[in-house]
Amino acid sequence: MLIEDFGKFVSNTRYGDLPATVAEEAKLRVLDLLAAALVGYNMGCHRQLLPLLGGAPEASVWGLGKKVSLRDATLVNSFQSHALYLDDGSRFTGGHPSSVVIPSAVALAETQRVTGQDLIAAVAAGYEVFLRLGRAIYPSTVVRGFQSTAVLGAAASAAACANLLHFSPDVATNSLAIACNLGVGLKEALKSSGSQPLQVARSCEGGVMAALFAGQGAQGAVSILEGGFLKAFADQPRSTDMTAGLGTEFSISETYLKIHGGCRGNHAPVDVTQEVIRANGIDPETIVGLKVRVDSVTYAAEIHSPSSGDEAQFSVAFAIAVALVHGDASVFQYTDAKLADARVRAMMKKIRVEADDQLDKSYPDKRAASVDVILVDEQCFSGYIENAKGEPECPLSAAEIEKKFLTLSRGILAGGGERVRDLVMRLERLQDLNLLMASLQATA
Image (cartoon, rainbow, N blue to C red):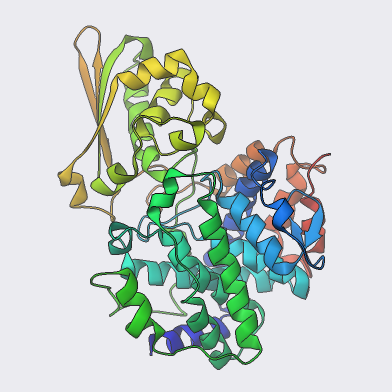
Protein backbone atom coordinates (compact mmCIF):
# COMPACT_ATOMS: atom_id res chain seq x y z
CA MET A 1 0.00 0.00 0.00
CA LEU A 2 1.15 3.55 -0.73
CA ILE A 3 0.88 4.68 2.87
CA GLU A 4 3.35 1.99 3.89
CA ASP A 5 5.85 3.24 1.31
CA PHE A 6 5.54 6.75 2.73
CA GLY A 7 5.83 5.38 6.26
CA LYS A 8 9.13 3.67 5.44
CA PHE A 9 10.42 6.85 3.85
CA VAL A 10 9.48 8.97 6.87
CA SER A 11 11.01 6.48 9.28
CA ASN A 12 14.27 6.07 7.39
CA THR A 13 15.07 9.63 6.36
CA ARG A 14 17.91 11.22 8.35
CA TYR A 15 19.97 14.38 7.95
CA GLY A 16 22.92 12.41 6.59
CA ASP A 17 20.71 11.06 3.79
CA LEU A 18 19.85 14.51 2.46
CA PRO A 19 21.70 16.10 -0.43
CA ALA A 20 23.42 19.28 0.72
CA THR A 21 21.12 21.36 -1.50
CA VAL A 22 18.02 19.88 0.18
CA ALA A 23 19.35 20.66 3.66
CA GLU A 24 20.07 24.22 2.55
CA GLU A 25 16.59 24.60 1.03
CA ALA A 26 15.04 23.36 4.28
CA LYS A 27 16.92 25.95 6.34
CA LEU A 28 15.94 28.76 3.98
CA ARG A 29 12.30 27.78 4.23
CA VAL A 30 12.47 27.77 8.01
CA LEU A 31 13.91 31.29 7.83
CA ASP A 32 11.31 32.41 5.31
CA LEU A 33 8.42 31.06 7.37
CA LEU A 34 9.72 32.70 10.54
CA ALA A 35 9.63 36.02 8.66
CA ALA A 36 5.98 35.41 7.76
CA ALA A 37 5.14 34.39 11.32
CA LEU A 38 6.87 37.38 12.91
CA VAL A 39 5.05 39.83 10.64
CA GLY A 40 1.82 38.02 11.51
CA TYR A 41 2.67 38.35 15.20
CA ASN A 42 3.59 42.02 14.85
CA MET A 43 0.26 42.73 13.14
CA GLY A 44 -1.63 41.01 15.94
CA CYS A 45 -2.81 37.95 14.03
CA HIS A 46 -2.25 35.75 17.10
CA ARG A 47 -4.31 37.80 19.54
CA GLN A 48 -7.72 36.38 18.69
CA LEU A 49 -6.48 32.88 19.50
CA LEU A 50 -4.74 33.67 22.81
CA PRO A 51 -7.91 33.44 24.94
CA LEU A 52 -8.46 29.94 23.59
CA LEU A 53 -5.03 28.60 24.52
CA GLY A 54 -3.99 26.79 27.68
CA GLY A 55 -2.23 23.74 29.01
CA ALA A 56 1.22 23.11 30.39
CA PRO A 57 4.02 25.40 29.09
CA GLU A 58 5.79 23.13 26.61
CA ALA A 59 6.54 25.02 23.39
CA SER A 60 7.00 28.66 22.39
CA VAL A 61 4.62 31.00 20.60
CA TRP A 62 6.94 32.79 18.18
CA GLY A 63 7.27 36.45 19.03
CA LEU A 64 5.25 36.26 22.23
CA GLY A 65 8.00 34.96 24.51
CA LYS A 66 5.53 32.63 26.19
CA LYS A 67 5.18 28.86 26.25
CA VAL A 68 1.87 27.02 25.88
CA SER A 69 1.03 23.39 25.26
CA LEU A 70 2.66 21.60 22.33
CA ARG A 71 -0.56 21.41 20.35
CA ASP A 72 -1.54 25.02 21.09
CA ALA A 73 1.89 26.31 20.08
CA THR A 74 1.61 24.40 16.82
CA LEU A 75 -1.85 25.84 16.23
CA VAL A 76 -1.06 29.49 16.85
CA ASN A 77 2.32 29.45 15.07
CA SER A 78 0.73 27.85 12.02
CA PHE A 79 -2.12 30.38 12.14
CA GLN A 80 0.09 33.46 12.31
CA SER A 81 2.45 32.02 9.68
CA HIS A 82 -0.40 31.65 7.20
CA ALA A 83 -2.48 34.66 8.23
CA LEU A 84 -0.86 37.17 5.86
CA TYR A 85 -0.27 34.72 2.98
CA LEU A 86 3.49 35.29 3.04
CA ASP A 87 4.28 31.59 3.39
CA ASP A 88 5.86 29.62 0.57
CA GLY A 89 3.84 27.52 -1.85
CA SER A 90 3.76 25.11 -4.75
CA ARG A 91 1.93 25.74 -7.98
CA PHE A 92 1.90 21.96 -8.51
CA THR A 93 -0.23 21.42 -5.41
CA GLY A 94 -2.00 24.74 -4.92
CA GLY A 95 -0.84 24.66 -1.30
CA HIS A 96 1.61 26.11 1.21
CA PRO A 97 3.74 23.42 2.85
CA SER A 98 5.82 25.60 5.18
CA SER A 99 2.88 26.72 7.34
CA VAL A 100 1.84 23.14 8.11
CA VAL A 101 5.23 21.38 8.24
CA ILE A 102 7.50 23.81 10.09
CA PRO A 103 5.30 24.93 13.03
CA SER A 104 4.66 21.36 14.18
CA ALA A 105 8.24 20.26 13.56
CA VAL A 106 9.73 23.20 15.47
CA ALA A 107 7.29 22.89 18.40
CA LEU A 108 7.94 19.17 18.76
CA ALA A 109 11.69 19.64 18.31
CA GLU A 110 11.64 22.18 21.13
CA THR A 111 9.82 19.84 23.52
CA GLN A 112 11.99 16.84 22.59
CA ARG A 113 15.25 18.83 22.72
CA VAL A 114 16.47 17.29 19.48
CA THR A 115 19.24 18.67 17.27
CA GLY A 116 19.04 21.10 14.39
CA GLN A 117 20.00 18.27 12.06
CA ASP A 118 16.96 16.31 13.26
CA LEU A 119 14.75 19.31 12.53
CA ILE A 120 16.13 19.72 9.00
CA ALA A 121 15.44 16.05 8.21
CA ALA A 122 11.90 16.34 9.60
CA VAL A 123 11.17 19.41 7.49
CA ALA A 124 12.45 17.67 4.34
CA ALA A 125 10.29 14.60 5.08
CA GLY A 126 7.18 16.68 5.74
CA TYR A 127 7.63 18.65 2.55
CA GLU A 128 8.05 15.49 0.52
CA VAL A 129 4.80 13.98 1.76
CA PHE A 130 2.94 17.26 1.17
CA LEU A 131 4.25 17.73 -2.37
CA ARG A 132 3.81 14.14 -3.53
CA LEU A 133 0.28 13.79 -2.18
CA GLY A 134 -0.55 17.25 -3.51
CA ARG A 135 0.58 16.51 -7.05
CA ALA A 136 -1.71 13.46 -7.07
CA ILE A 137 -4.88 15.43 -6.29
CA TYR A 138 -4.26 18.90 -7.77
CA PRO A 139 -5.92 20.81 -9.40
CA SER A 140 -8.97 18.58 -9.09
CA THR A 141 -9.18 19.09 -5.34
CA VAL A 142 -9.41 22.87 -5.73
CA VAL A 143 -11.93 22.63 -8.56
CA ARG A 144 -14.06 20.55 -6.21
CA GLY A 145 -13.95 23.32 -3.63
CA PHE A 146 -11.26 22.14 -1.22
CA GLN A 147 -8.30 24.16 0.09
CA SER A 148 -5.11 22.24 -0.66
CA THR A 149 -3.05 23.32 2.33
CA ALA A 150 -5.66 22.23 4.85
CA VAL A 151 -6.26 18.94 3.01
CA LEU A 152 -2.56 18.05 2.83
CA GLY A 153 -1.43 19.66 6.06
CA ALA A 154 -2.23 16.95 8.60
CA ALA A 155 -0.40 14.21 6.69
CA ALA A 156 2.62 16.45 6.05
CA SER A 157 2.72 17.59 9.67
CA ALA A 158 2.45 14.00 10.88
CA ALA A 159 5.29 13.01 8.57
CA ALA A 160 7.57 15.66 10.08
CA CYS A 161 6.60 14.67 13.62
CA ALA A 162 6.99 10.92 13.03
CA ASN A 163 10.41 11.51 11.52
CA LEU A 164 11.45 13.73 14.42
CA LEU A 165 10.35 11.09 16.92
CA HIS A 166 12.34 8.42 15.05
CA PHE A 167 9.31 6.17 14.74
CA SER A 168 9.63 2.72 13.22
CA PRO A 169 8.19 2.24 9.71
CA ASP A 170 5.00 0.71 11.17
CA VAL A 171 4.38 3.53 13.64
CA ALA A 172 5.21 6.18 11.02
CA THR A 173 2.75 4.50 8.66
CA ASN A 174 0.04 4.64 11.33
CA SER A 175 0.82 8.31 11.97
CA LEU A 176 0.26 9.15 8.31
CA ALA A 177 -2.82 6.94 7.98
CA ILE A 178 -4.49 8.56 10.99
CA ALA A 179 -3.51 12.04 9.82
CA CYS A 180 -5.11 11.53 6.41
CA ASN A 181 -8.47 11.70 8.21
CA LEU A 182 -7.71 14.97 9.96
CA GLY A 183 -6.94 17.43 7.16
CA VAL A 184 -9.78 19.23 5.42
CA GLY A 185 -10.64 22.77 4.42
CA LEU A 186 -12.71 24.69 1.90
CA LYS A 187 -11.52 27.20 -0.69
CA GLU A 188 -14.63 29.30 -0.11
CA ALA A 189 -13.20 30.17 3.31
CA LEU A 190 -10.62 32.36 1.55
CA LYS A 191 -13.38 34.96 1.29
CA SER A 192 -13.04 35.33 5.07
CA SER A 193 -9.29 35.64 5.14
CA GLY A 194 -9.14 36.63 8.80
CA SER A 195 -10.48 33.25 9.94
CA GLN A 196 -9.44 31.05 7.01
CA PRO A 197 -5.98 30.30 8.45
CA LEU A 198 -7.67 28.38 11.28
CA GLN A 199 -8.46 25.46 8.95
CA VAL A 200 -4.77 25.32 8.01
CA ALA A 201 -3.66 25.58 11.64
CA ARG A 202 -6.10 22.86 12.70
CA SER A 203 -4.70 20.57 10.03
CA CYS A 204 -1.14 21.25 11.21
CA GLU A 205 -2.13 20.56 14.81
CA GLY A 206 -3.95 17.42 13.67
CA GLY A 207 -0.67 16.03 12.37
CA VAL A 208 0.88 16.35 15.83
CA MET A 209 -2.13 14.61 17.35
CA ALA A 210 -1.94 11.80 14.79
CA ALA A 211 1.74 11.17 15.46
CA LEU A 212 1.33 11.21 19.24
CA PHE A 213 -1.70 8.90 18.97
CA ALA A 214 0.19 6.45 16.76
CA GLY A 215 3.07 6.61 19.22
CA GLN A 216 0.71 5.25 21.85
CA GLY A 217 -0.11 2.29 19.62
CA ALA A 218 -3.14 3.54 17.68
CA GLN A 219 -3.63 1.93 14.27
CA GLY A 220 -4.52 3.62 10.98
CA ALA A 221 -6.08 2.12 7.87
CA VAL A 222 -3.31 1.05 5.48
CA SER A 223 -5.72 1.43 2.55
CA ILE A 224 -6.42 5.07 3.46
CA LEU A 225 -4.84 6.58 0.34
CA GLU A 226 -6.14 4.24 -2.35
CA GLY A 227 -9.50 3.60 -0.71
CA GLY A 228 -10.22 7.00 0.82
CA PHE A 229 -8.01 10.09 0.56
CA LEU A 230 -7.25 10.05 -3.17
CA LYS A 231 -10.83 9.28 -4.23
CA ALA A 232 -12.26 11.81 -1.80
CA PHE A 233 -10.12 14.75 -2.95
CA ALA A 234 -9.66 14.19 -6.69
CA ASP A 235 -11.74 13.04 -9.64
CA GLN A 236 -8.85 11.25 -11.32
CA PRO A 237 -5.93 11.12 -8.86
CA ARG A 238 -2.48 10.66 -10.37
CA SER A 239 -1.13 7.99 -8.05
CA THR A 240 0.96 5.83 -10.38
CA ASP A 241 4.25 7.67 -9.78
CA MET A 242 3.64 9.01 -6.28
CA THR A 243 6.52 7.06 -4.77
CA ALA A 244 8.96 7.09 -7.69
CA GLY A 245 12.38 8.11 -6.38
CA LEU A 246 11.05 8.41 -2.84
CA GLY A 247 14.00 8.73 -0.48
CA THR A 248 16.50 9.64 -3.19
CA GLU A 249 14.75 12.50 -5.00
CA PHE A 250 13.47 15.46 -2.98
CA SER A 251 10.96 18.04 -4.18
CA ILE A 252 11.44 20.90 -1.72
CA SER A 253 13.15 23.07 -4.33
CA GLU A 254 9.99 23.11 -6.46
CA THR A 255 8.29 25.37 -3.94
CA TYR A 256 8.23 29.12 -4.49
CA LEU A 257 9.06 31.93 -2.09
CA LYS A 258 7.29 35.28 -2.24
CA ILE A 259 8.49 38.82 -2.72
CA HIS A 260 5.05 40.43 -2.83
CA GLY A 261 2.25 40.15 -0.29
CA GLY A 262 -1.15 38.66 -0.93
CA CYS A 263 -2.26 35.62 -2.88
CA ARG A 264 0.29 34.02 -5.20
CA GLY A 265 -2.06 34.51 -8.13
CA ASN A 266 -1.39 38.26 -7.90
CA HIS A 267 2.34 37.97 -8.32
CA ALA A 268 2.90 37.13 -11.98
CA PRO A 269 0.50 39.95 -13.00
CA VAL A 270 2.40 42.39 -10.76
CA ASP A 271 5.78 41.22 -12.05
CA VAL A 272 4.86 41.46 -15.73
CA THR A 273 3.23 44.88 -15.27
CA GLN A 274 6.27 46.24 -13.42
CA GLU A 275 8.55 44.85 -16.12
CA VAL A 276 6.58 46.56 -18.91
CA ILE A 277 6.62 49.84 -16.96
CA ARG A 278 10.39 49.64 -16.35
CA ALA A 279 11.36 48.47 -19.85
CA ASN A 280 9.44 51.25 -21.55
CA GLY A 281 9.97 54.08 -19.09
CA ILE A 282 6.25 54.51 -18.55
CA ASP A 283 4.90 57.06 -16.10
CA PRO A 284 1.96 55.34 -14.34
CA GLU A 285 0.08 58.65 -14.41
CA THR A 286 -0.16 58.31 -18.21
CA ILE A 287 -1.92 54.93 -18.06
CA VAL A 288 -5.56 54.90 -19.13
CA GLY A 289 -6.11 51.14 -19.17
CA LEU A 290 -4.56 47.78 -18.29
CA LYS A 291 -5.82 44.47 -19.56
CA VAL A 292 -4.49 41.55 -17.50
CA ARG A 293 -4.86 37.90 -18.50
CA VAL A 294 -4.44 35.01 -16.06
CA ASP A 295 -5.26 31.30 -15.95
CA SER A 296 -8.75 30.25 -14.85
CA VAL A 297 -7.58 28.89 -11.45
CA THR A 298 -6.08 32.28 -10.60
CA TYR A 299 -9.15 34.05 -11.94
CA ALA A 300 -11.50 31.92 -9.82
CA ALA A 301 -9.83 33.19 -6.61
CA GLU A 302 -9.66 36.82 -7.77
CA ILE A 303 -11.72 39.43 -5.91
CA HIS A 304 -11.85 42.34 -8.32
CA SER A 305 -13.70 44.73 -5.99
CA PRO A 306 -12.43 43.99 -2.48
CA SER A 307 -14.18 45.60 0.47
CA SER A 308 -11.30 45.35 2.95
CA GLY A 309 -7.55 45.04 3.17
CA ASP A 310 -8.00 41.33 3.90
CA GLU A 311 -10.02 40.81 0.71
CA ALA A 312 -7.48 42.90 -1.22
CA GLN A 313 -4.99 40.05 -0.70
CA PHE A 314 -6.94 38.18 -3.38
CA SER A 315 -7.32 41.11 -5.78
CA VAL A 316 -5.06 41.21 -8.83
CA ALA A 317 -6.34 44.71 -9.60
CA PHE A 318 -5.44 46.01 -6.14
CA ALA A 319 -2.00 44.39 -6.17
CA ILE A 320 -1.11 45.99 -9.50
CA ALA A 321 -2.63 49.35 -8.58
CA VAL A 322 -0.87 49.66 -5.21
CA ALA A 323 2.43 48.61 -6.80
CA LEU A 324 2.06 51.30 -9.48
CA VAL A 325 0.98 54.03 -7.05
CA HIS A 326 3.15 53.23 -4.03
CA GLY A 327 6.08 51.35 -5.58
CA ASP A 328 5.53 47.82 -4.28
CA ALA A 329 2.91 45.23 -3.37
CA SER A 330 4.47 44.16 -0.08
CA VAL A 331 2.49 42.70 2.79
CA PHE A 332 2.33 46.16 4.40
CA GLN A 333 0.25 47.52 1.50
CA TYR A 334 -2.75 45.25 2.08
CA THR A 335 -4.61 47.52 4.49
CA ASP A 336 -8.00 49.18 4.62
CA ALA A 337 -6.27 52.56 4.37
CA LYS A 338 -4.41 51.68 1.17
CA LEU A 339 -7.59 50.22 -0.32
CA ALA A 340 -9.36 53.50 0.42
CA ASP A 341 -6.53 55.57 -1.11
CA ALA A 342 -8.09 57.65 -3.89
CA ARG A 343 -5.11 57.17 -6.22
CA VAL A 344 -5.18 53.40 -5.74
CA ARG A 345 -8.95 53.26 -6.32
CA ALA A 346 -8.57 55.35 -9.48
CA MET A 347 -5.88 53.01 -10.82
CA MET A 348 -7.98 49.94 -9.99
CA LYS A 349 -10.78 51.29 -12.15
CA LYS A 350 -8.42 51.23 -15.14
CA ILE A 351 -7.57 47.54 -14.69
CA ARG A 352 -9.51 44.70 -16.27
CA VAL A 353 -8.67 41.12 -15.30
CA GLU A 354 -9.85 38.19 -17.38
CA ALA A 355 -9.26 34.46 -17.71
CA ASP A 356 -7.34 33.26 -20.75
CA ASP A 357 -7.95 29.64 -21.74
CA GLN A 358 -4.63 29.66 -23.62
CA LEU A 359 -2.84 30.06 -20.29
CA ASP A 360 -4.78 27.10 -18.88
CA LYS A 361 -3.07 24.80 -21.37
CA SER A 362 0.30 25.17 -19.63
CA TYR A 363 -1.01 25.36 -16.04
CA PRO A 364 0.37 24.38 -13.52
CA ASP A 365 3.69 23.79 -15.28
CA LYS A 366 3.54 27.53 -15.91
CA ARG A 367 1.47 30.04 -13.98
CA ALA A 368 1.74 32.72 -16.59
CA ALA A 369 0.26 36.18 -16.99
CA SER A 370 0.14 38.78 -19.73
CA VAL A 371 -0.71 42.47 -19.77
CA ASP A 372 -1.52 45.23 -22.23
CA VAL A 373 -0.75 48.73 -20.93
CA ILE A 374 -2.59 51.48 -22.79
CA LEU A 375 -1.41 55.08 -22.45
CA VAL A 376 -3.17 58.40 -22.82
CA ASP A 377 -1.55 58.92 -26.24
CA GLU A 378 -3.06 55.54 -27.34
CA GLN A 379 0.28 53.72 -27.36
CA CYS A 380 -0.01 50.12 -26.18
CA PHE A 381 2.79 48.12 -24.57
CA SER A 382 2.42 44.41 -23.93
CA GLY A 383 4.22 41.87 -21.79
CA TYR A 384 4.13 38.19 -20.90
CA ILE A 385 5.74 36.23 -18.09
CA GLU A 386 5.74 32.45 -17.64
CA ASN A 387 6.10 32.47 -13.85
CA ALA A 388 6.44 34.94 -11.04
CA LYS A 389 9.79 35.66 -9.41
CA GLY A 390 10.60 33.09 -6.72
CA GLU A 391 9.42 30.02 -8.65
CA PRO A 392 11.97 27.22 -9.14
CA GLU A 393 12.66 28.46 -12.68
CA CYS A 394 13.67 31.87 -11.29
CA PRO A 395 14.37 31.25 -7.59
CA LEU A 396 15.31 33.75 -4.95
CA SER A 397 18.94 33.48 -3.90
CA ALA A 398 19.92 32.70 -0.33
CA ALA A 399 21.04 36.33 0.00
CA GLU A 400 17.63 37.56 -1.18
CA ILE A 401 15.81 35.32 1.29
CA GLU A 402 18.03 36.49 4.14
CA LYS A 403 17.43 40.11 3.12
CA LYS A 404 13.68 39.48 3.06
CA PHE A 405 13.84 38.05 6.58
CA LEU A 406 15.85 40.98 7.91
CA THR A 407 13.53 43.49 6.23
CA LEU A 408 10.34 41.91 7.55
CA SER A 409 11.67 41.28 11.07
CA ARG A 410 13.19 44.73 11.48
CA GLY A 411 12.03 46.31 14.72
CA ILE A 412 10.17 43.18 15.86
CA LEU A 413 12.79 41.04 17.59
CA ALA A 414 14.37 42.14 20.86
CA GLY A 415 17.77 40.79 19.84
CA GLY A 416 17.55 41.81 16.18
CA GLY A 417 16.90 39.70 13.10
CA GLU A 418 20.57 38.99 12.48
CA ARG A 419 20.75 36.68 15.50
CA VAL A 420 17.85 34.51 14.30
CA ARG A 421 19.13 34.52 10.74
CA ASP A 422 22.55 33.29 11.83
CA LEU A 423 21.08 30.55 14.05
CA VAL A 424 18.80 29.26 11.30
CA MET A 425 21.51 29.32 8.67
CA ARG A 426 23.72 27.30 11.04
CA LEU A 427 20.85 25.07 12.12
CA GLU A 428 22.82 21.87 11.51
CA ARG A 429 25.20 22.92 14.30
CA LEU A 430 22.54 23.47 16.99
CA GLN A 431 22.33 20.77 19.63
CA ASP A 432 18.88 21.93 20.76
CA LEU A 433 16.50 24.70 19.74
CA ASN A 434 16.19 26.62 23.00
CA LEU A 435 18.70 29.24 21.84
CA LEU A 436 16.70 29.85 18.66
CA MET A 437 13.38 29.96 20.53
CA ALA A 438 14.76 32.48 23.03
CA SER A 439 15.90 34.68 20.11
CA LEU A 440 12.37 34.77 18.66
CA GLN A 441 10.99 36.94 21.45
CA ALA A 442 9.65 40.27 20.23
CA THR A 443 10.42 43.65 21.75
CA ALA A 444 8.06 44.75 24.50
